[in-house]
Amino acid sequence: MDYKFPDNLKYTTSHEWVKIEEDIARVGITDYAQHQLGDIVFIQLPDLGTSVEKETSVGEIESVKAVGDLIMPLSGQIISINENLADSPELVNSSPFEEGWILEVKFSNYDEVNSLLSVNKYKELVQSEEK
Image (cartoon, rainbow, N blue to C red; front, side, top):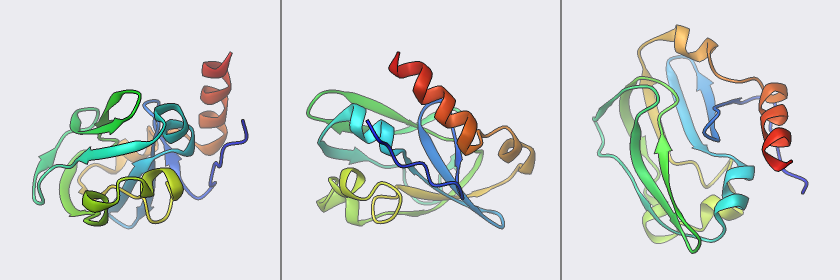
């Protein structure tokens, strides 16, 4: 399968992508993850203003095949959620890196950013999982 791996993003081992702009991180699930889940039918999002810890579950992504946790890649405070996903969760399938973003967090620990995967490391992870 030919997945998209934008190289301006960071990635997690739980298949979230992270776009860093100053102290704001936009988060979504990767092209690989949305393919694994199949057609997404519902996304449970955290409330605005919620403080979150890195590597904790902050919501669920429900597809026709499975329910998966949305794992926070960074600690911080939820400052924005993609309201369009309430009515159109399939945006995560059709446009995982653009219209299908899930939330934004104002992160509190820049060291955590350094622990995220580069695009090359994430590609290696996906290749190893596909074997």
